[in-house]
Amino acid sequence: MESMRDGEVYWVTTHGIPGSMPSFHGSLDDEQRWQLVQYVRELRRIQRLDEKRRLGPYEWDLPPGFPYPRVPEDNPMTAAKVELGRHLFYDKRLSANQTQSCASCHKQERAFTDGKARGEGSTGEIHPRGPMSIVNVAYNPVLTWANPNVRKLSDQALVPLFGEDPVELGMSGQEAKLAARLKAEPRYGPLFSEAFPGDADPYSVGNLTRAIASFERIIISGDAPYDRFRRGDDPNAISASAKRGEALFFSEELECFHCHGGVNFSSTVDYFDKAFPEIEFHNTGLYNLPGELSYPKQNAGLFLFTEDPHDVGKFKPPTLRNIALTAPYMHDGSIATLAEVIEHYAAGGRTIAHGERAGVGADNPNKSEFVKSFQLTEQQKADLIAFLEALTDTTVLTDPRFSDPW
Image (cartoon, rainbow, N blue to C red):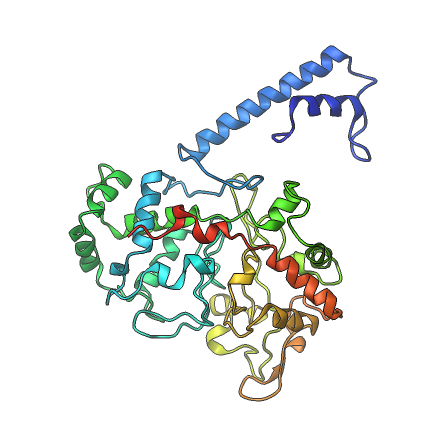
């Protein structure tokens, strides 16, 4: 109802919705129909007031049609926290040796990834998985590749800051040193005071992570050519090839949309007023090693947290927004190009012929039912890639709201 104008509501009460809702023309006179319009208008007003009350004073700048993100009650959004979080996100003082910031692995020009197969910490230690894009992370109900327990952005920020296996920013046990560094920077004084007014310890780790979370929550992408096409803003926003690719993507033959559907092109999603979060983890047949674990031990996915053998190799489906900018692909960066990703799914899984990881991924017993082989012509492969490239929102790459303030 929110998107319907009064005249449209009146039209529905007169004509109904073909094939769905019968006409009320025989039971409502003109005055009654306009009374219904006024009633719906009042419902809208009440809904907007209720949303405003629950969302708080923060003014979101969302793409058309995007839902409000769900915001934790213990960390309401404010412009001051967002601005503080932006400064912290780009500050290398958050690493023990002051060589890395959050932005070192989440570069704006690369859609907030870093282009590496696997992450590299401030001490040079290599992470077993690649850095996920944080674009639209506000809609993610779980915040790592496979840990179902990390549900809040402020909690996730603790992992790179203080985690020891692997070491990322390397600040474990150095909380006091971190606070001293921040206090020594004169620009932080007013930023922390405005973000956490009246707080006896504004430089606390909790405040630091809440501010970073607030900044990350506003990094929202929704102005790709495909968005403009689907909104009806520009029927020529995407090519004929991309339109054919769209039909393939949403077909039952390819099954892509089952794991990569919805506003964020991921089946793992949550937002304000959604009844409950949708959380899925899938095994895509990337590996099928002999022995008890069919995936490499350090990358066994959801199994590492549940110890359920059926969860070996299951990972969260990432968003496909800006996917053309976030190579290499898969949780461990082991597939280099979109063309190779399509070949992987077309085969129903990956076959590795030689070496310690040899195996036929298509035969993995935990493989998702949606990963099944299919056949495409070379033109169809090109069409599918054209569609995926049409999900690229270049505005997010240069938006000053998300840029380095230093």
